[in-house]
Length: 186
Image 1 (cartoon, rainbow, N blue to C red):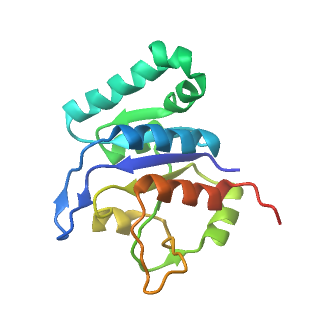
Image 2 (cartoon, rainbow, N blue to C red):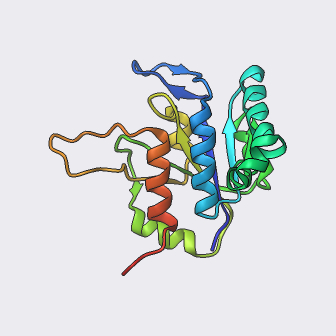
Image 3 (spheres, rainbow, N blue to C red):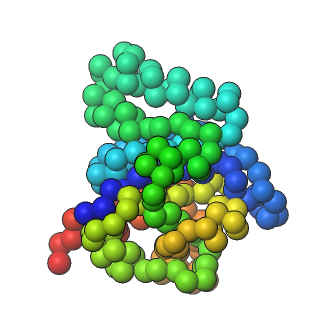
């Protein structure tokens, strides 16, 4: 099975109007995605943010849960948050994984050349370079990040009509990881 790392991208992402922006780090995203990463055997969870004050905030939260009193009270959370790697850029995350990575992205919108989860799971179970699976904040990853990805996963769709597709990044991460790495009952 290939090494799988997650990346939560705060820049470059899009706003509602399609402009490239930077979003803020949230405590919930740090905790909940780290817990998903730990549950599904990811080796790293990169929080990608260009602003030093935001990176400092994320690192301070993680330190509290890893080295502070909360790590003693809730060791499972300590385990999860120990996977967090706070970096400035996507290139920093790639370098931390050794430089030779397969970049995979998720998107709530349909993108050209999407790979279904069943096929993606088979690819992930085979040999190859580490996979860095990116999730975008805001209104999604900037177009040049989407275009640079080797694998673009299909959107997560429910049965509702008309289609409603606006999951939180935390929920999208959980569904994606379960489809890619969850134990199957079949």
